Length: 452
Image (cartoon, rainbow, N blue to C red; front, side, top):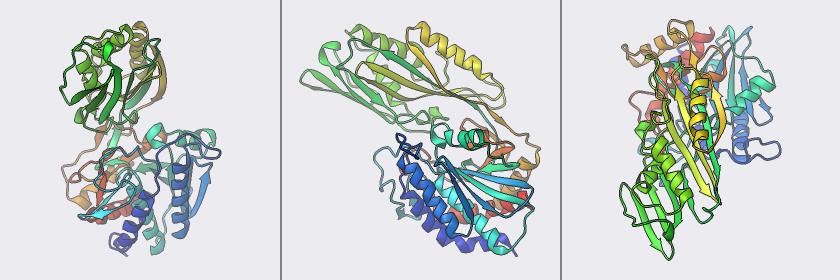
């Protein structure tokens, strides 16, 4: 039996189930009883539980942190790690972000690429193998978490607190092809300050650590500023005794901030050229001018570095809020594999505290490194080359962080093909229906070869 042909029989169901999964809005919210990440992610886990059981698999929910879906038996386990949560949708979508609308041969919706679409495709690859009657030597376990976009507390609970066994070998369809053999380390920090005289100032921008803010907005009393001028996509509109401010940016994934245009940083670039008459606000503007600027490499913070193999450090200011006299700035740094995370943390902490602001370490995630010549990487590379004809492809190192970091002997494998537009974390995220054939074939072959 040719699994690569059989799996295509499920394509219509795959399209329908991706649409159904997209319709469950699963952005992280405040915790509720029995729902550590809010109602949306818990509903998404329930949705995949129901789908798994409908397809004939055993599934178990672990306190709405994660679920796992099992197939077959074996002393060793092949893990497939995916997630059901999504980043906030943002504005200005062509089609409603949780509609799963099909147009121009594409399924539109938040999560089509990251990561519900690939999760559904991988689940149906499991289904094709189960229905074929082929016996594998490893058990297959798909683990679906509900907090990947906000620090992966889901897998820390599943593997850490619950002490669930790690798969012996694993991949996550939550990046791009060919194979990601290395992922940078990650340091996320919050910079805070309580002011005394800024109760009438509001400045807000960004949704999450790992997205470049595509807009910032706020109000500043007229008497705090000298002559204002609109420039660099930043607008000041006077209404009575306040200026309403709007700054337009270009969104991008926080691991690749240079691909975007940071609306928060752009706003402060304009403010630095305006006379600021309030001392506390002037201090904040100076802070941005001293350390942030429009940089994405951390140079002014003193953390610019590279290890020669996995690229340079990136720094993204993902979110900023000044309201009710309280400031919070969220920074996300992706650190080359061979650079010590503690040094990055200590450097940022010293600069922030020396300036008189508060420093809070939000999270620190070790890098991932699986040798290029390992069974896992070489097998997946061979599958990718055979099924795409891309014989010059090489394993890659990325700045993004995937679930592979939270398992052992795990790598990211797809699901973004080289000729697909990367709309992850951006408006109008979509998956081309024509690409689903190739993805089904790649994942069914990956499961078969890694587990046979």
